[in-house]
Image (cartoon, rainbow, N blue to C red; front, side, top):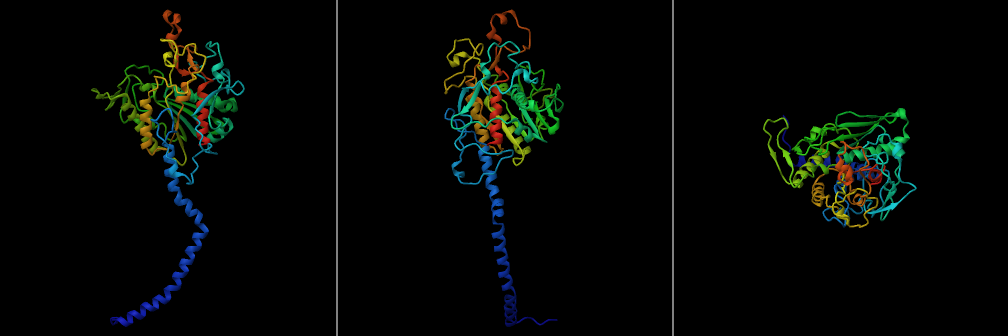
Amino acid sequence: MKAPLTSSMAMNQMVRKARISTPFIFTLLAFIIFVVILYGQDFACTFSSFDDHQHLQTLDNSFHNSKLHPSFVERKEKKNKGKRKKRLPFAVGKTAEGCDIFDGEWVKDTVDKPMYEEWECPYIQPQLTCQEHGRPDRGYQNWRWQPRRCDLPKFNATLMLETLRGKRMLFVGDSLNRGQYISMICLLHRLVPEEGKVMENSNSSLTVFRLKDYNATIEFYWAPFLLESNSDDAVVHRIQDRIVRKGSIDTHGKHWKGADIVVFNTYLWWMTGLQFKILKGSFKDEVQEIEEPSTEDAYRLGMKSMLKWVERNMDPKKTRVFFTSMSPTHAKSIDWGGEEGGNCYNETTLIEDPEYWGSDSRKSIMKVIGEEFSKSKAPITFLNITQLSSYRKDAHTQIYKKQWNPLTPEQKADPKSYADCVHWCLPGLQDTWNELLFAKLFYP
């Protein structure tokens, strides 16, 4: 049995340990300093990535600030001034500082517009082929969007195709988003040989344009409310009494997983009045529990569901998500100083008033979008096509389209009674939407 240590013996051992450990400590400190100097930049990048990630969310959750619509969320970029910004997926450059590509004017352009001919794109649906259905003018095809403080980058079909190699691009929404989807295909397909592409149509909600040599797809998924509804049939969906099921985003969302670029839209189908029907249970329930909040509150439910889905399912380091704002209609010519009872029929000129905002585009809905996007962490890029499209009363399909039903004698006697002032001719306005999408994808 060892004898207990006296205080003097313990002190002597501590001194000996200190003599042994002091050089080791100095050596360790020197090694740490050397590593920090050698790899300091890597450490800085690692730690700064946390700030960069948060900064990207702040930017992408915010709309551009519009002097016309104060309901938009103003970007708080001043506090981030001087911070390094992490490059977004697919970006190859950036838009010039101070450039708002959605703030500008339409410029006549007969050289570069249209970007393709109607007959060159066999994928345009007959509801959008205005020339084929007898539209006498072509001026609606010859307009170019010009931002005030910069230029839009030229749409580069080769860059887009190479970017899509091995990828899946998905448009989700209603027939207006389908029009943008078809426009994108028309802008790209000429560079792909016939044997290298195929359009896979079916009666299901999903339409797929397959680029075989690129191992890529550009897809459209019919979901006019994004949530499950009684209007989800891709063919038969003309239902007046529309109902949306609460908390049902995954009904459709399970088909969106795995997409690399997603473009959402939803607006027009919600606009049935001041209130909207929301189903709290299932469409299979014998007794359905339905509530009727205001249209704004119902739409807010849709926005919250979409944003939560994006947060859960889209990786901001690898994917990009876009939301296209409301597409304006031109059903009331009195809005722009025309005669009462008129609409877009026979309109061939643009609205020149820069402050113009049609009565069919609800600012209260824009306010809901702004509020929900500002609270969310989902990294979504907002494509604000509403204002610039509002000037284009000339660009609708009007009566120059395939009609769903035979025209009555009364309709034939009054063409404006059946004019379509919702959808847009192709080629036309929606090609510009894709130019803006291209700019935000590659030059955010």
